Image (tube, rainbow, N blue to C red; front, top):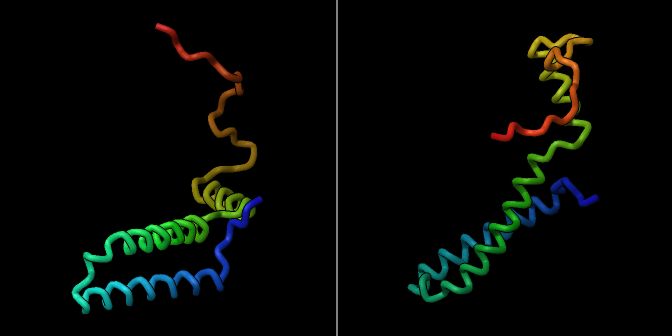
Length: 100
């Protein structure tokens, strides 16, 4: 199973990469070369974007244990009681879609 967490060292590395990108943009702008470096900036932006996406996904990931705890709390808040069927009907299995 892939590592689903985003460890503190990786968080700090992401902050560093973001700061480096910001500094590079400011430096190129001060030198009047901001748009001259478009290919390199696009590459760097792509790398940062990819890492930001990983950060977002992994920091919002619920482990199975957390997901189960969240389900229990949600059930309690919604008024569910033990023995109460979710749809009060017997499970009739898969039914084919209506054909018209």
